[in-house]
Image 1 (cartoon, rainbow, N blue to C red):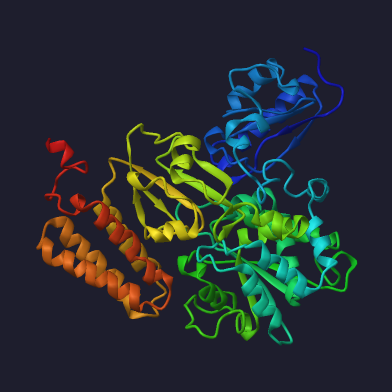
Image 2 (cartoon, rainbow, N blue to C red; image 1 turned 90 degrees about the horizontal axis):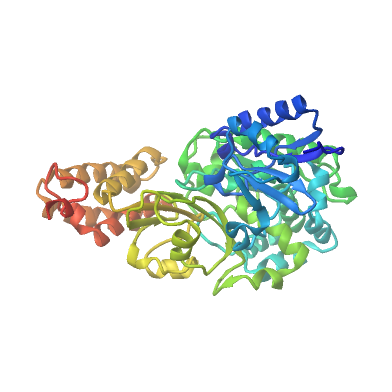
Length: 528
């Protein structure tokens, strides 16, 4: 097979998930093999498409479209070249056109449309795929018009609370102050979540654009991205993106030549889960210990350094450019009820095909886990599913037909959170999972309020007595009483939501709380 005359674009992800399974070695092998064969290539280090079970996923640009191969190991590269990789040749690892893969075809990618498609740091790639179109549309509007567009779209906070984004922006817009701030909460600490990281590593300019639009809307001139320290690749990529955006006149004293100024910095957190709570995050940004503030006043009126501040999650800011480009109504046409637009769903745990899926609100958990996820990796039946991070409720297999919607999940005492889904098969010990919730809270509490600080510690002790079989009836009563106290009296959602996984485990899986000491996890099945 003859070598091509023009450079062939070959894509090997630089996403952290792909790097963890050997993408760097694959990239080096592709470069070496191409050089040895005299084949000119343009090696693009793109983000991940989200099909994590196929990583490292190698793609090649052909006249027919981008052909994917995966999962590829470095030892496979020579064979791929022998098969005509640069022309999309047949090979056992060949998956076909990426856009034709069922996983991709079934999605509605608005926020993640460019992730895995472009060179993350290429502004020319970003512009070629509609980047900055939303910002340019915003520059033609007044701040009030931008705020109204966001409000009319139905966009709600993607960090967990689901508060209407437009209302928060209007509060900051209407506030009078000599300085306003835009703060992006990128402290993605929920178990089973990785959408923020993937977006930063695969399309960093999108969040930057969304933050600039927010700044124009409310009259802010300075912004901060608060990023968790466990994301070194995302940090490096975002730092480089901000520098390139400044050099291109997208950030700085004049945004795209306009009268609007906006300066942006990235600040690293120190690994505290509680700093995902907005007021604790602001304390940390100010150089203080990350402790929750009492509200009121709300951050929209008295936030960073006491000034009106928009604090939104990464996915909230990232949704804004599409809304400004296409209009509020176009965005609101996706979804159901009061949950409009799309949700980046992160599927993990004991599942055959885990990864990032972006779909309109309303799809059922069953479709996500069984159809897109392929069921459990172990092959065992699904016993429990936790939605919404470590403080989310455990749902049963009988509840899988619930829609991914804020209100639908709340109706069964669940929560959507940041869109993370963790799947468990029938070997899971739900009493241990309940204990873990208390242990997690005890470790991550900021310590300011007694119900959370002491309640979680007493919760671990109570669970240990229940698991050991010590006065179970009395300790189960204490468990419920303690859970009510934490829910009603905790200062923030950290302590207030910790009883969610505990009580859902107890209510849905009571047999796990009545297991004889030393019995196997699948008791009483093992005794039958």
